[in-house]
Length: 120
Image (tube, rainbow, N blue to C red; front, side, top):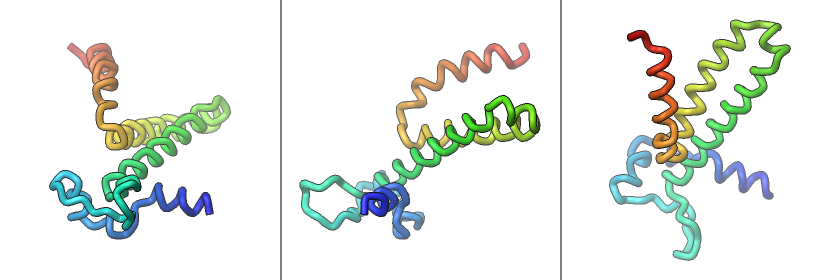
């Protein structure tokens, strides 16, 4: 029962995969999927998408960690390199969708990287 509830909290229901429901939080017309009283946590599509983006970001980070092991680098450096580029962008992108203000913490590092690596 615990894992089925957890799976239900992490994967958006089918109604949330339709385009109008993705915009419903910002339009002020929240779709409450819990169907309960006011004391329950608000389970709208925005809540599900935030959880989903957090899970995708965590999975991308996990793949990034496992592919950075020494034997993976020595086995196939191209796989290591491409997987780091892809999972790095996935992890950062979905982390920004999961927690919007995380961009404030990422901007200084990205600016420093750009200043050090881009040609003058």
